[in-house]
Length: 245
Image (cartoon, rainbow, N blue to C red; front, side):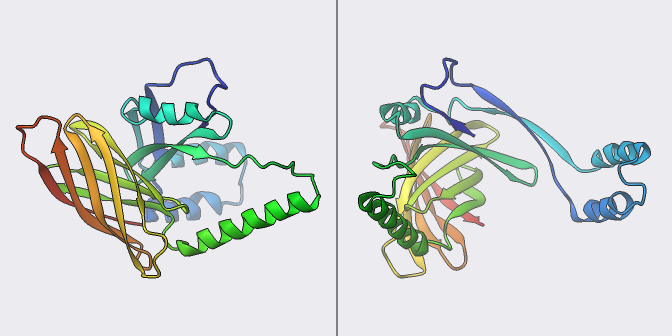
């Protein structure tokens, strides 16, 4: 989902209702054998049985609070560069869990039109292609979504998004507190399979920092987290986190 800054006069939504089904292996095999392979496919009786069969798949629904995800700071980043930046939202499903990530999406505004065949336009497109290809090759095995857990005093599910430009975004979600949104970077210049990463985010508990390593070959992320409370007299909190693709 993408929100075009300035394209709508409506306010930013405060929540979203999400519904999804999980395709369990045993039910999937039964569905294919008893429904999809029938000879009367698309007949009125088949259509009726098809709808009934879909109800056998585990179905979940959840209302997700967006106020801690689409923050005023995030909207300010988008609105500061309306001509080149959108607000991108991603809904990530993992069995019965779901996470929503919001982040600014910057798209290139070329100096030349797509139909311009001048030497200058061709040179710009060629340079952009080479730069993009080189960057993508550096972290080809890392980009994507990683799902895991945060352990310690702070507990919950961790969904981490790795981008080809070396930036990271993540959400820590738990049942008893608002989601914590974090952003950061990881090393894309090293030739080692294991790279360092660091993300930070603010919540009612204070400033949370995730520091650790991402293994490009194993496609795993591990590390430690700390929360520095906003109140000076409160003790710092710490724990660990893991995630994998």
